[in-house]
Amino acid sequence: MSVLIAIGAGLLSFFSPCVLPMVPIYIGYLSGAAVTPEGITTARREAVAHAAAFVLGFTLIFIAIWSALSVLTVIFTKTDLARAAGVILIVFGIHFIGIVRIPFLYQEARVEIRNRALGYPTSLLTGMAFAAGWTPCIGPTLSGVIALATQEATVWQGTGLLIAYAAGLGIPFLLTAFALGSATRWLKQFSPHLRKVEIASGVLLLLMGVLLLTDNFQRLNALFFQLTPEWLFQLL
Image (cartoon, rainbow, N blue to C red; front, side, top):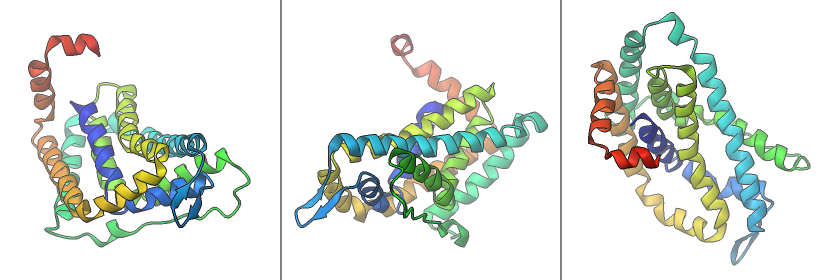
């Protein structure tokens, strides 16, 4: 259940109002796409390769953040961490839903790389800069995944949740790169629905916060295992 939530959180981060509009620009820029009256044209293989390096960059930062914070699982009990994280996630959820707005969560830091001679390392570094610069935007959702990671039995299992989150965020990047021109048009058509995604993110954070605060998230995991058919576990 935690893995599915982490992947879903990554997808919501991708479709968030401050990430989605930048996706075609980043992929087109990193892959050296040419903007023409007909749209964006570039070699598909090159676009996907640069997108993969970009995804790897922000994945490494997410894992690094978790590695730095995982020391908290040694200092504090899981119950204390769950309750503290629950309060924080409830606040973030209230913000995304729009009940109360938190100004600093609208801040962002956009990094422009002028020297593009580095090629794929540039895409990797830009992905790392993306993770650091957009932390105020994707931070609440990322915090939710880190909160779930603190409830795992081992640090490695927590790392798996961060990788799942990065996959949820990264796979749409790769799909967009694979079909850059048509994907760009579709993303523009999806733009009017960004507010709905923001509300959905808020509801998810709010529910996660309540479950962690009331120490019921593990019960949700247990219920998921009970309701999941045995053949599905064998398949996995």
